[in-house]
Image 1 (cartoon, rainbow, N blue to C red):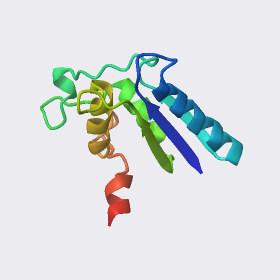
Image 2: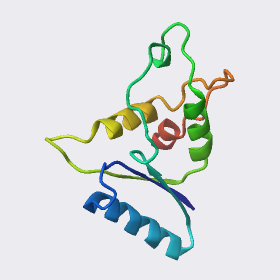
Image 3: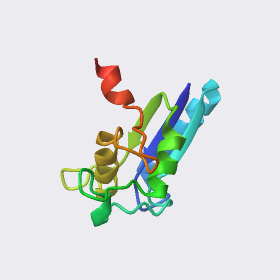
Image 4: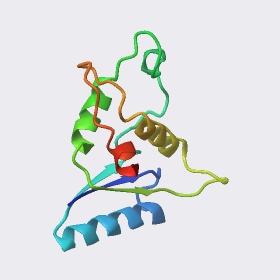
Length: 122
């Protein structure tokens, strides 16, 4: 089984990042594969460009989005680890959750990505 941990906290030594790392260690010790996607250390940009808004003329997923989709295509378990700030999640995590809701949007090759989430809900 393959797990991905998507974590968002600006401080590497935070409790949030400690939880993410502990999860990764436990999964690794169980024999499963695990991948940590640390949004702050990846310099994830939560702001969309005008041509990145789904449904608009000229929409095209950027090369970073296409490669991330490919990286996560065979993941079985998604774990989101983030702090709860001012009654909400960090902007970076909100942007990622919006991206997950658009998982089936066309890639730069024009082919639809597999919508694993809605298929699993049926």
